[in-house]
Amino acid sequence: MIVRIMGEGQLKVADGHFNELNKLDDELLEEMESGDEAGFRRTLGALLDAVRRLGTPLPDDALEPSELILPAPDATLDEVREMLSDDGLIPG
Figure 1 (cartoon, rainbow, N blue to C red):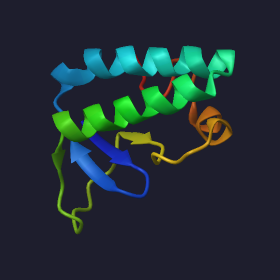
Figure 2 (figure 1 turned 60 degrees about the vertical axis):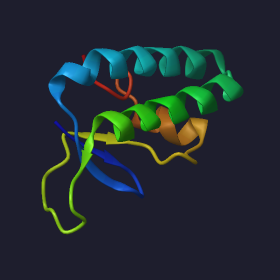
Figure 3 (figure 1 turned 180 degrees about the vertical axis):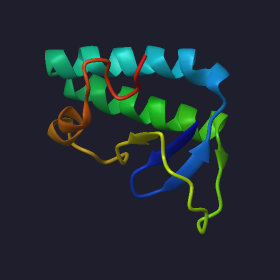
Figure 4 (figure 1 turned 90 degrees about the horizontal axis):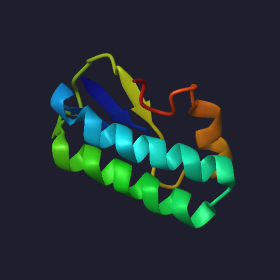
């Protein structure tokens, strides 16, 4: 799956890693619902770090469609809230 981190670029992440990413996404959703700003910041950072660690960066000139778009590391709680679906940032 091709994942874009806004403001950074795209990474190819193997489908086998999505269980780990979904756990972080569920945590992020809970923290957003409770208004836990510190927890939100920590978990958003952990989610983006996991994508960077597990993914392979695509060249800047690659024109692959992103199947998943994640917020920038400095995104606000409100900005991320606007990006959410019922499943969180990561479907499934």
